[in-house]
Amino acid sequence: MKYIIQIVVFCLLMCNIYIGFKYYKLKDSALLIADKYASLSIREERINQKLKNYSIYQQTMEGCDIPDVIMVNREKDSLTLSSLCKNVTDTIFCFRFKDTHCEACIQHAMRLLNSIAEKNHGKIVVLCGYTNYVHFAAFVSKQNNEMLVYNIENIKGWDIDQIEQSYFFIINDRKVHNVFIPLKEDDEYTQHYIHVLLHKYWKMNI
Image 1 (tube, rainbow, N blue to C red):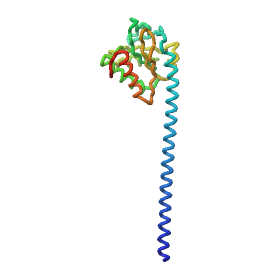
Image 2 (cartoon, rainbow, N blue to C red):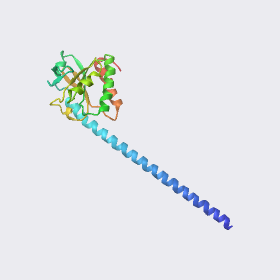
Image 3 (cartoon, one colour):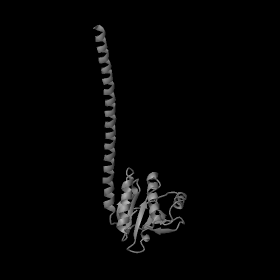
Image 4 (cartoon, rainbow, N blue to C red):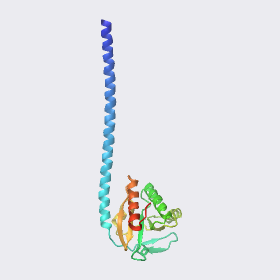
């Protein structure tokens, strides 16, 4: 009888050890899930805040005039941004970035623009912001010849040009339209924007 009691006690002890082990394992999993959920919540909150801030820039820029800022091409010829619109009806798709912006974001945008240029989808202009001309010339040499690439260190009067983020916009009727600041966290968001603009202005799809 005593032997049986010992076996029962041993089994109960092992069950308690097993249950305790499972409890702590589940507790660790629950904490891990909670941490991931908190990280996702913070990420979503940051994205929402970015979208709110970007929306203000988009609304402010909509319909504004093209400034007469001086820019240069690879040959160091000077011209103004507004001079790109030779005709009132010209529609130009612009991408603006500076050399201090996210390199991965710039490369992603340029891959999209180069693929569009290869298919002759509209008139594409890239407005770089290099402080070093050699770096600008090296960048131009790698791009599709169908794109026009210029360098402007700063576009004075544009608040959007002071944020550390690249952006897109359309020039139509010599006005700025459809300003878009891409999200680093969502490449599909950018692709959808480009798809919408190509269809809207040139009736084309990518």
